[in-house]
Image (cartoon, rainbow, N blue to C red; front, top):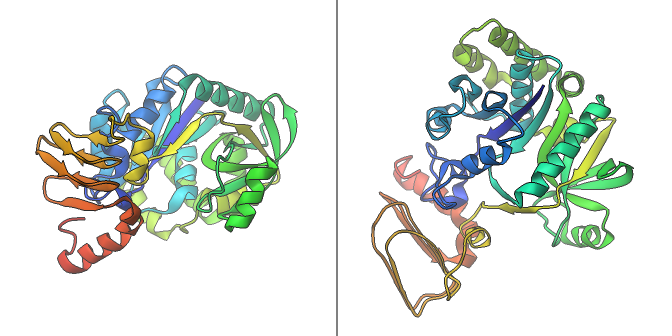
Amino acid sequence: MRYAVIMAGGAGQRLWPLSRIRRPKQLLPLMDGKSLLELAVDRLRGAFEADRILIVTNAEYAAQVRQVLPELPPGNVVGEPVGRDTANAVALGAELIAARDPSATMAVFTADHVIRPRDRFDQAVQTAFDAAEAHPDALVTFGIRPTWPHTGLGYVHCGEAIAEGVHEVLGFREKPERPVARQYVEGGKHFWNSGMFVWTLSAIRSALARHLPDSAGKLEAVGRSAAEGGDLTELLAEVYPTLEKISIDYAVMEKAEKVLMVELNCEWLDVGSWPALANVALPDDADNTVVAENVVLIDSGRNVIVSEDDHLLAILGMDDCVVVHSTDATLVCSKADTQRLKHLVAELDAKFGRKYL
């Protein structure tokens, strides 16, 4: 059987003041009333029954996730008591699936991107599953053809094709300097690392046991408990703080002997900052991106305006700004300064503690 795991544990400080410690960015209803997590699940409908979609999230978010995704069995939403990066989220998902079907094939998806069009996504996922099942010892990743020399992403070095749409992977490079990234874009053999994967359980469990044995062993015990119908809350609370915090790329993918890549020929849009919202929402005639009920704009253009209630936002004579209203905090800044939001959040923490975080 084929299963999907969606990793949805991040916080997203660059979307403050809507994204908070107890309500992360993947749960914000910014996409026509839907959240990024809901869109991620929607993309999987048709390929997976609801009982074969698992969400690995932060324990603080688990109740909210179950509320926005009532079609999923409650037990399919698993909360990590502390964040231990993607390697452990993957390992936990693998063991929970193994408790149901040790011979399964597993896909791993993220919950913080808009991916479109849907038909190309479906085609790439089908190709990746076919490749993983035809090469059950391989780890399959999705690559995105780069459109500019991004220095904040990892790159996959694509080798020879072994089947239609499937290539050998020659190596990985994490966050290269701009001249190197520019060479990658111009050369055509390097793809952005999407952080999404497909593999057989035997392949990923074997790789984890080899390259991250401590986590693999401890989470295997969690899987055994799940197979016996046990309550995982206490066991996860005991095990998780002892796990090494490490990404799946550093822990496994860069060390694996056989890695394949399927190109995801889609728009792959990270909604990780307020200006990025303009890439996924329709602008008005003055290129303002508005996600709010009551807004009046006069002589203002290229702004991002967001409100989570019917509070009136009146914008006069402002260009290239971000205005975000929440129930207890309002952000006003230039688009150019949104990359400094993590610094602002740190200042808020120092002055008010967690009151506004």
